[in-house]
Image (cartoon, rainbow, N blue to C red; front, side):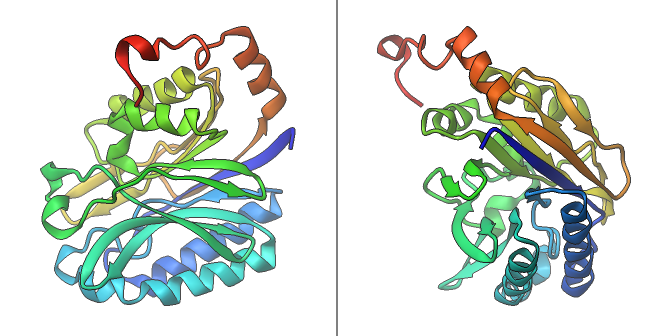
Length: 261
């Protein structure tokens, strides 16, 4: 595939209200599909937000949510990535599901839990990275705080990721970190990044949005502000291949000196 239309979906997550968030998400998926999107990224924990007190009960809703999104993606012939609370044998994970035109093809459990926000007290960490084979290409997946760990993104690039999909709930006042790190991860690994943040206020947290679609050269193809919005951009894989041939970052690495990710 030489070109792909990718989308980032940003909205204010209603804390604890699964059906309201599901309605928002499926409506947004339909809108981006009407604009030609073949791949769409939803925010982190988009079905309910970080409603810690009720997270175990809310996680029980995830199979129903996934089934609704799966059916929507089948209808639209769309690939979608977004994170939800996953309940497995009494343990809750923050899991990004990759849904390919109606089929759940992979799941990535967030590796780095943000202890500042007590994630590690309510969630368990995953134990493996993910590059998923899909109908739109090889997708690397990361979630929010993972962005601060470049080793993960380099591993995804070395394993063949062409796009990194990054759902997030990244709040104020760290907007500049968000913008800088997203561009850095794209540039240093010469791949596309589609980042979907939430916006609005949840409890005591104010989320700034600023969802983005970034090229392998670090060009910001689309940038949101602070309101509900869908971004759509064309991703040119021919340009990515030419850039990787021009500046051979992945080939010129000195793994003999500093090891592998």
